[in-house]
Image (cartoon, rainbow, N blue to C red):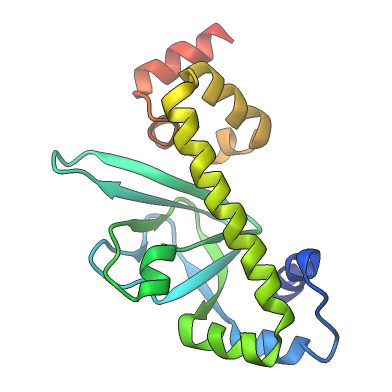
Amino acid sequence: MAEDNKLLYYLKKWSDITDEDVPAILSSFETVPIKKKKDLLVSGDICKYLYFITKGCLRSFYVDSKGVEHIYQIRMDNNWISDLESFFTQSPSKYNIEAIEDTQMLRISFDRMEQLYREVPELERYFRILFQKAYINALKRLNATMWETAMDRYNEMLKEHPDMFQRVPLIYIASYLGITPESLSRIRKRR
């Protein structure tokens, strides 16, 4: 499926866009490739785009005062990634976004997105649902780290994203789960 078609497929899941809306939508996005290990966003920079990943894998992370990385997001094919706080407020980001694999994306700027809402009002519904889901997922993740065991978090990730274990280094998965690589290794041996 072509990159544009993937985007349209996902936009049509939660909105009633018409064939007449397609040219305005497609002209609002630009194709962006990024190589493995390259930065898409660096902490301190303003996140100027919202990205739709058509093929590939990225991680969003911050580095604490001791220099330890903490992974906030791992996103793969047909998912969105950005630092939404920085994107919507146009303030410096606390996060870095890095490609885990060679990745193809479509991106839209904040200003172009606002203009697209006026041109295709139905897309506001799509993005409202998308951002609601992102907020709920962030809360679920926070709650899981507070109240679920590491084994439960691992099993949930394995159930929801089994392909992640083939594509993402285990050190990143451990960080995302909020555990050490050694703990992840022990959990995997017990399964």
